[in-house]
Image 1 (cartoon, rainbow, N blue to C red):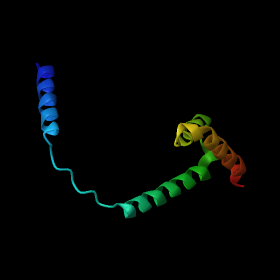
Image 2 (image 1 turned 90 degrees about the vertical axis):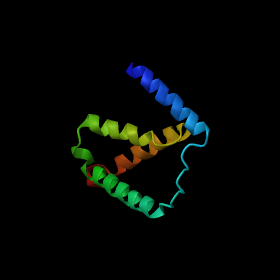
Image 3 (image 1 turned 120 degrees about the vertical axis):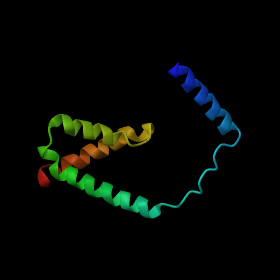
Amino acid sequence: MAGRNFYDLTKALGRWDNEGGAIAPTPVPDTALAKDEERILKCLGAAVIMQWNDLPTDIQRNIFVDASSMSDPARQFQLKQQIARFLHEHKNGS
C-alpha cells in the first residue's frame, strides 16, 4: 500500500513539474561564500599536509585517491603525478 501512495505522489509531482511547478528562486551570487569556502579548504588542506606523516598509511592513500579524482578523467593522471610530487617535496616538514 505504501508503495502505491509513493507512486501516486511521484506521478502527481511529475505532472505538477511538467505544468511549470514552483517558480525557481532567483539565484543570488555567492562569491563571498565561495571565497570563504576556498579559504576554509586551503586551511584544511594545509592542516592535512602538516599532519601527513602522522596519518596512517590507509588514510593517506584514501586522501590521495580522493584528491586525485577531483579533476576531469583526462587530467587525473597528471593531477596524481602533481600531488605525489608535492607530497614528496614536502614530506618530513621540508
